[in-house]
Image (cartoon, rainbow, N blue to C red; front, side, top):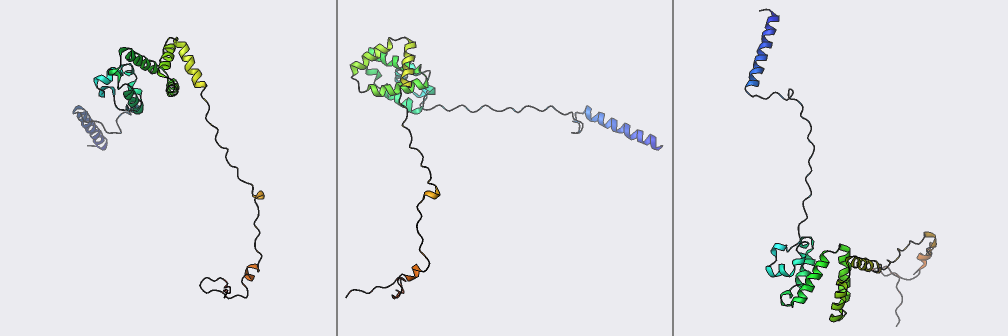
Length: 213
């Protein structure tokens, strides 16, 4: 067999082996595989913020009944606010129907407020504790009779009328070096004159003074 025929035979044999490998499902070598398009990096969404406890499902039936107007916003409240509302509604079952309706109406009004308006409402509630109960009830009924637009204006006006925080003390400025008082330095030889001619205590190395008889 001549060299050219030998080369052709080897090439044909290699082609047959490759065709057999493809027929048997053998994957091609990495150099023969087509380049796959790069996949975009998928970033996972941030984990949702955990709800403060107790959750609405953890409340008993009586607590859910007394806090019914807050059911829709309960998951957004902090743990401190939840404890306060549970404490405020603890005597709901023993109140007359009129007071129960008044408490629920206040809860519904509070749930519809913005965070800034809720802060203003808490401040106003703290101030209203000094007013007699009958006057508070009359003021609340008058407030309830106002339209929603007037209520928003009152809340915005109360927030604007809040006194600003007291100014902080001004920072102390460093005194320039040239304005500092200079301490005179002792001249050379003056320190040596101190205690001259007096015996020195060997323990303290201080001049000894004669003791009075």
